[in-house]
Length: 121
Image 1 (spheres, one colour):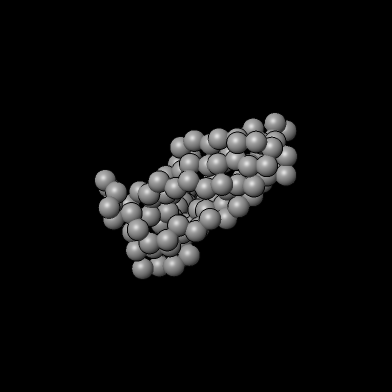
Image 2 (cartoon, helix red, strand yellow):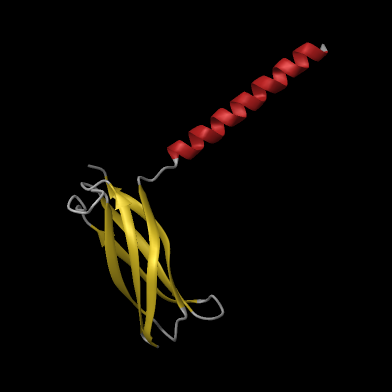
């Protein structure tokens, strides 16, 4: 193979690789995003998690929440449903959500593990 052919083949492979990365990123877009706003450890049996969920106002999403102890072990877990809505919020898509997570022992943090769309509009 000539040097010119090798450069052409490598360029083509690199371009296909970049296209695949772009496609995989776009294809894996779940249509929902979240941001942890705050958490509060109420006592050894309860933590609250405040988050902002951005999604299509007509869609329904679910988010999994975790409360963890100081060893990063999960001591509380809950899946919440965020129904259609958000049209009355400033950007029409982002909704504030507060959820309570029951815990088996004292938590030191609350996190949003993941959010996903369960129903397309």
